[in-house]
Structure formats: C-alpha cells, structure tokens
Image 1: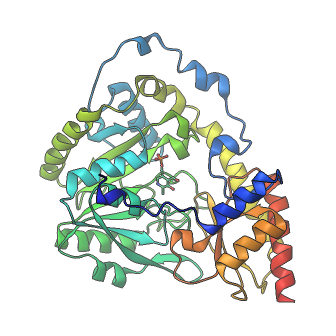
Image 2 (image 1 turned 90 degrees about the vertical axis):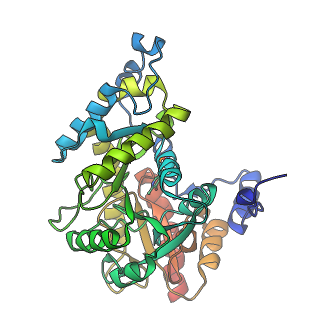
Length: 392
Ligand SMILES: Cc1ncc(COP(=O)(O)O)c(C=O)c1O
C-alpha cells in the first residue's frame, strides 16, 4: 500500500529508548543538543516580533509563486547589509530551508539521479533526497587543525548523474566555511560536469572571527547555476515562523529557465503564509539584537570549553569558524555509543554521537552552543569529569 520511499526503519534507537526511560522516571536530563532557539532561554524582542504580525494587510490574500515584493526587497537589503547585491526577481520565498531543498530537487532531478553532499554534515539530506526520488552520494571533509573540503574526493565523487552538489556554508556541525580556493575548484568541476550548486547558508551570520579567504555568501556566484538558501529559522532564531528563501544566480540563460520553472513549482503549493511575508521587513530590522543574543550564547559556551580544555588534554574541541555547534574528539577508550550512553545514564547529560552526522572516525560528540550557558557549563563539567576520570 505504501511507497518504497517511505519504507523506513521505525524502531527508535538505543539513545532515544534510554532517554525515554529516564524521563519516565522523572529524572531531569541536561540537554546539550538543544538547537531550538526558542527553548534556549534567549530573550527575544517579543513585542516588536508580534507587533509586525498585527497588520491589516494580513486580511487579504495575494497569492504569488515568488513571494511578496516587500518581503523579497527586505531580503535584498539583508544581503546589501552584508555587502552582496541581489536582484529581487531572483529571490523565491519558501516555508523553510527543508522545503527549499525539496523544491530544488524536484526541479533538477529525475528518478534515480544523484545529489552530492558533504560528510560529516546535517543528517536530513538523506531523507530529503529519498523523498524526492534522488540518490545521495557524499564528498569528504577532512580535518587538519581546521576543516577543508577534500577536493580530490569531491572531484572523484561528481559523476555524469550528479545533478547538484550541496555546500553547507558554514557546515553543520563542523562550523567550516567555504574558502575562495575551494569555490574556484568547485565551480570548475561543476561547469565541466554540468552540475548545479546548492549552497545552504542558514548559519552564515554566525562566525567567531574574520577570514579573508572565507566565502560569506554564494549569492553572486555566476559561474554555474547556483541556488543559495537562507531563512529566518537560524538568522533570526524564529523557526516557528516558517520562512526561508532561495536566491538563484548563474549564467543569464540558465537563470531565466530556472526562475520560470521554479515559480511554477512554488505556485503549485503556495505554502508561504501571508503574515510571515508581511512581517519579514520589520523582523529583519531586529537582526542585530537577536543575533547579538544568540552570539552571546555561542561565544560564552565556546569560551567555556576552551577554558576547561587545556593543551594536551585527552579531549579536544575541533576548530570551528562559525555555526551553532561544537565537536569534541574523545579518547577511543570507549565507542561513541558507550560514551553517549554513559553520559546520559551516569551524568544525565544528553549529547549527539558523531555517527549521527557520519563522522569518518570514532569517537566524536556534538554539542549545541546555543544552549543556555548555565545549563551548558553544568553539563559540560559533568561529562568532562567522566572523560578525565576514564583517562587516569
Ligand atoms: C544546515 C541546515 N540546513 C537547514 C536546516 C533547516 O532549516 P529550516 O528550519 O529553515 O528548514 C538546518 C536545521 O538545523 C540545518 O542545520
């Protein structure tokens, strides 16, 4: 009765089962993987967020496949403030970045064609590809006191059936940005193979220091057909408002065909709600306030890790340039699964195992830096004590 693409293994994993058991006993767990910004004790400018929703314009419905002009112009100003120039006609609103991916996959892929994505990275790609009848392949990110795209592996992995390559800038969870040299090479490979680029920049406003070699955004990338994805779930910490966007760039003739087709796909669903579109210009003005508060959590937690991990420590925090996550490399004295279950059951601290993001080697764990610093410190101290005890 059901489609093959939904034949998932639905049994919960060991971590979820044990977490449920602990929660059933009413024992509190410190959640160090919380990435829902509305649950991290951030102070939002509530009145101004809600006031923007109380517009009389929300009573009328003006359906549009591209999204409203005023929202798209606000996105143009957002990029301008970051030093990038975008034509509003090349911006398409969606309800979320996940939806943006689906729409682009529908646009580019025939059944059984391929998408190339980074590894380690965001675990939803496999699902998104599968739901759109695509096959996902991976290219390697290497670590050498900093993350980089393994360009040899990238080149080998782009095949005749690859319709799109995904870049996550900065990547989740490694926090690595795309570099100038990498962009040149990727453009070259994609042009040769007639492959589009999808650049996911949902975390691009969050970085810890400057770097001239870093690509801040791909919205002006014209060498090949490029889809740059953004949205307010991360940039404004408002995932519940459901608003994302796609910026199309590339050779003019390609952009023309792409935008015509994209508009028809989006017009078929019209999934972006009117109140959020109308509120977007006012919400984007709140960006400095909201981002300052988010960055305070990120930096506070990141600094705390640095302070607690002295050089030569058996536990290492991998270098991240930005994003919302910290990756810790733990001693291999236990498997990842053993570490995370012990943290949960003995310390009552929930962390992500590296295998969730497909790390090449054991043993890594991933922590959300968005967590309230008080919770983060307590949880981090507990797990660090266990790690150090295991080594002595
Ligand atoms: C890299 C990346 N892209 C996209 C998303 C999803 O964004 P949205 O809430 O806009 O669908 C996430 C969510 O964590 C993410 O980590």
